[in-house]
Amino acid sequence: MSLDDWRLVFISVCLVLVVAAYAPVTVALLPSRDEPFFALTILGEEGMMEHYYPNDDPLIDVGEEVRWNVYLYNHMSETQLVAVKAKLLNSTVLAPNSTSCSPSPALVIFEVRRMMMHNQTWIFPFSWSISKVERDDDFLVVNSFSVNGDSIDTHVVALNGFNYRIILELWVYDEELRDFRFGWGDNYEARCAWNQVWFNVTSPE
Amino acid sequence: MLSRKLRSLMAIFLMVTSFFCLIHVSQAFGDGKEGSSRVLQTWYSIEASYLSLLQAERAGGDVSELVAHLNTALELYSEGEIALESGEYEAVVLITDEANEISSEVLEYSMSLMVASKHFMDVIFRNQLFRSFSVVCFVLLFGFLGWKRFKVYYIRKTMGLIPEVVVDES
Image (cartoon, rainbow over all chains, first blue to last red):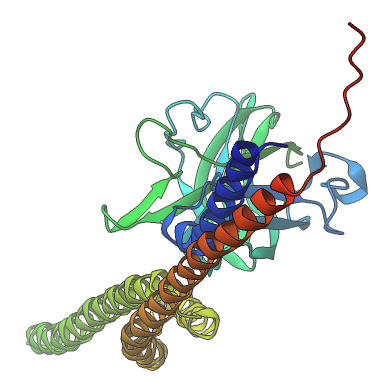
């Protein structure tokens, strides 16, 4: 190797060492490139993605308790204040729109708020039952619904009690709005998380 | 005559009962109003504590304990809402007082944590910057000196080489 080649080697080694020396400072100044996200999942009684109904039968009787668990994971790089809102719908009421991140217009039957740190998982029980049902010709009306022991008056109608669904929406506290909003991210990259489980209700005798 | 007396007695009775009913209703209405404003106040208190906690976390502070405390306040807030719906105003007062106390503590602590963390992070950053600068100076100085020595060594070695014997075939 000639002297010029050795000079090049020396300069390269020095440059690499200088860059390595400033790496910790640069890393501290650079923003995190991790994609922020939340995960929301409805789990069955045993905390698995199975056995959502008693005896695996989606036909739910009045007063029959259905036990679920709700799984929530925060990967937003910082502590977040979140609210999980549960809604009871039939098949005709609009579900949340994942593209525009607009929530379902249905009535909120249950809401829970929680503060979650980055990388934190939170699983909470979600037990529900139908307290009161009425028949109106071919339709079935759910008049009262109970979640985690709290009862709420509803009026959700479905043809012969088929195709009811429970929707869980994840609302995140927005610092600028000073309120919760459905989803997270800005207008260009809005993201939202919601989940639904369908069931049928037995008609009263 | 008797019916006239009975009628006036009835009227007095109705007036007295309506008076007591009015007092009861206005009291209940007042309690309800106070209860809902207490619950709302608790929410604002939790909200302010959360925003302060967020600033402390962004400044580099460890907020795990504060998050746990504020979650307790959030649970109490939910209990307060339920108590308000069921008209248990005394319970609302007790619950919201406790929640307010917790969130005020969190607010106070997170503010001081933010200041301390900011200062601590500044010190860490300055130390890191100084360390990096020292390493760079060391690299440049010893690189330059090392190169000088190597150059001398290389030239001496090259000059001291015995030229190879070339076979002239011509």
